[in-house]
Length: 102
Image (cartoon, rainbow, N blue to C red; front, side, top):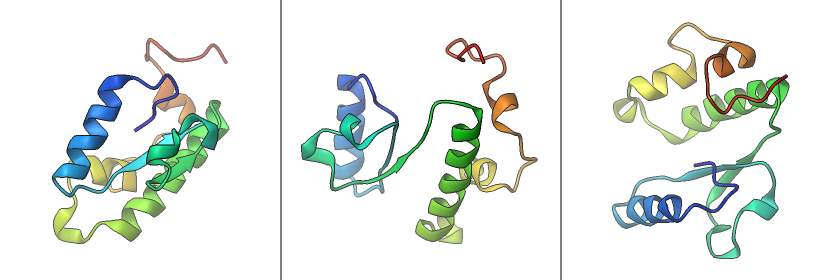
């Protein structure tokens, strides 16, 4: 969950996932973006540019591969882990309303 603005809904979702025993991994541009009370969760740092997003995708693939058993894999896992056709970071951003103007 990426939450640089510390959206209360994100904290609610993290709490719900924690309550039901779901694995949570945070994505953050900096460790400073993660409040001290949830810094014990795994997190993946990334840069907010095409190269940084491509690196983030690779790190997420590695994370999912090491943390999820095959029976727990879903369509979402397959898309990120590379079972679906891969896209580069520039393509990933295309059409997003919050895409930076690179």
